[in-house]
Image 1: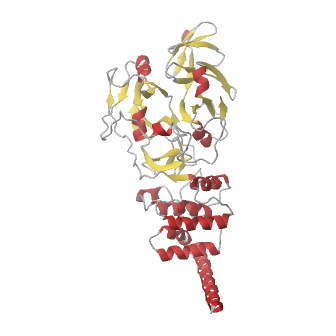
Image 2 (image 1 turned 180 degrees about the horizontal axis):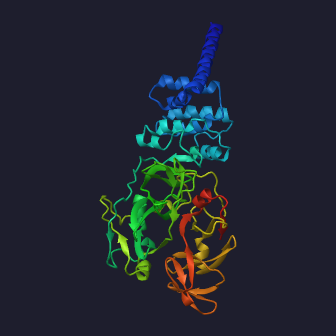
Image 3 (image 1 turned 180 degrees about the vertical axis):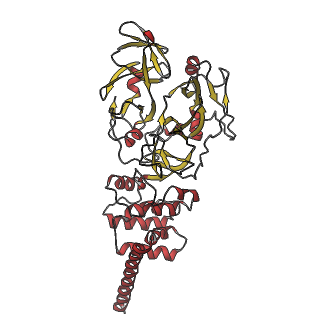
Length: 457
């Protein structure tokens, strides 16, 4: 009787192998048939899930790993199914990470990219169950410049974190409208100055605005510690952006509303979709993180982002990012971390230096201890001036050597004063040293985006 049962089992397994082989052939002939198999483990059909589990156990392919890791930790996977997927992963890959999502992700992302030809379709099929608009990001015909398996869902639908798209401004805010030490992101464009309370940006992560007649977009990703502002117009086309609901290397991805391309907030580059892979790039704007008191003193005619946003939010309360900033733990992972600095130690990321200059990050602790700091990147000398509020601005320095800085002007080695502005240092005979865009970021996130960055600490 036992022998009869074994024979029956052998026949059934053989039939399953034939079915699996047919599925693989059918995929080659008709398209995404095979890829749909990987949704069965998270479907409501228990029988279909079990059949697919058996198929996967019979014939392992290395490109199953990214599919199964993403499936296992999707919101649709039950605990029992996740456990079975992990057992299949352990057996197929030879790894033994158990139910440790972080280890699976880092192992995948540090291995050579090995994705199923229709991995994008799989991602579309999986996430459109959460938000049908997610399909617009992922389908096979869309260009990409990053690994799709590193694009991670953040747990919310598109624009689930509501961007500010029709901001109001206080043109003559009372000095005590905000506490003096409240952090703001300040910028000046075409002679117009504006302050954006950082806490408000943490709640919305994106503001679409205009300043000095130019369209701008401001982003803040609390997970990467990065606030950056860009000119939203590229080649005379003004783009409107939203919060995509996805992250890449712990940094939020934006989407533009015309092409549904995904853009990396930290770099201003389109990375998935019709805009990816070309010369298109958002131009970073010089910004500074400072206190409301310091910004107001430098720019008495500044406007201020109004808290009248149309959302019922008490902007005086701290956001969850306040607690996140106090630990070195990560919510969204990166392939590798670099222990030259702690994960969330802040750096000043310098942007838009000459093309031959390498990406540059300067530890803020160094700048706080050296209010005037001279350096060089790719043969391009620069100076960083840091005021008492901790606000740092980066300027080209040429052959000028600065000795001191009082928050409003810098004095060079010849005793001549150079006035600080948001666009340049203005010196004797109206000489100008232009300012480079720069912004704060957590070290781990900047290094993940630019692994070959220079670090000054």
